Length: 117
Image (cartoon, rainbow, N blue to C red; front, side, top):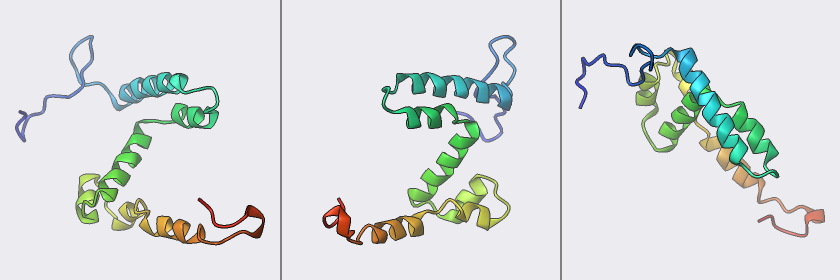
């Protein structure tokens, strides 16, 4: 197990064992996302486009949302992701938008034949 003061990089260059750069990590992830997009069925073009546009930063956003959705206190998430302003972290809280969407789904549309699924 690593110690708190352990500075050993998690990912290293195959060439010289030095830490890989953020740019190189993003290149590797882009290749993985692109390969995953190629595995999706032909009728999933929208999903393929989103996956091909994904990046390391996209993964960061996904991770922040997952932390908050799991119930971790937003103050600790804020510290963990190094947001200096709490409002930045709060942008990832989607509970209100989800409740709003659920409420809007209750409306019956006369041309849709009743209540939505």
